[in-house]
Image (cartoon, rainbow, N blue to C red):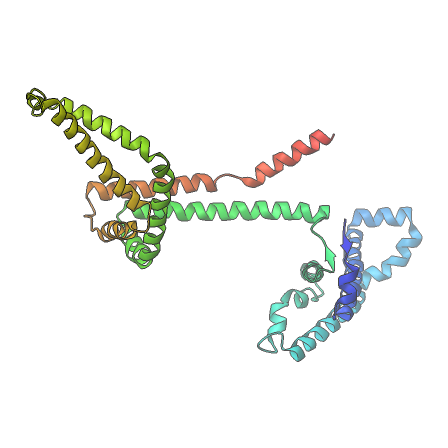
Amino acid sequence: MLSLNREKLRSSHQRLWFALDAVMLILLFINLTWLLLDSLYAVNGIQDMVRQGAPDLAAFYDPIHRNFIFYDLIFVSLFLSEFALRWGHAVVKGTYQRWYFYPFIHWYDLVGCIPTSGARVLRILRVVSILYRLQKYGIIDLSKTRLFEFFNFYYEALLEELTDRIVIKVLSGTQVEVQRGSPVLHRIQQEILLPRRQQLVDWLSEKVAEGARHGYVPKHQDLRRYLEENVAEAMNQNKDLKPLRYMPVIGTWASHALDRAVGDIVAQVIHQILSDLASRNNHAFVEDLVEVFINEQEEPDSASSQQVVAAVVEVLELIKDQVRIKHWRTELDERLAQNNNSD
């Protein structure tokens, strides 16, 4: 349902222009309706039916039909007058950088005034432009009308189909270029990663710290016990340390003391490493790591380079699969299901 915002209309400083828009919409509706009816009357079969069924109406309209261009020129003169008025207003207000820009930007208004059957159709664009202007200023709201929803749905569907095909074509070309050994990977490294090295370091450092804080710190006691038990088990099975256990008097004590000391040292080292990763102290370590990976130079034919190429191609293929999903079809199925449920 078309709604009119009366508050916006009363508070606007362009009420005269909106009134002119309303008048032009009425004239355009009359003119376009007349164009349609006259086109139908020009069909011989329909003209014969009118003459047989309503001879008085045919006698009245025949002279108008023969002089159709003359009567249409009356509307054209009104349309051109409105066009000249808006052009002059745009020049006075300095809407565009040059005074002669207006007719080029509103070319459809001029072309629609040409009194030929092909050009008259463009008068519909004048209707669209007026409605768009009223919608832009909030005077009317077309978004909730069935007609708008219908055309907007199929416009979005057409736009999605076109853009999807273009994107898939571009991605397919990129895949071919990468597989042929295009320098795109080197350019990504030099032109994208290197200039953003500091941002990558900050982001990765924060992620590593967050992962260490949430993954290690709450369970560091469990990890410590696990490390101590594994170290003790490994030392018990070590052949070089077994003679120590059989030493008289101090053998057992020394063995247990050594187990505790080594386990404590290993657990303490791991604890310190993960604690550093969970703090800001990991920044230098992550920076060195990123520096190595970004500046690493690989031979084009090396196994690791080929793996990177394969990974990039697979990522692009996944993006293509996602692009192929037709969201408008899903929306259409949902609408049909809602309509069936309501029925």
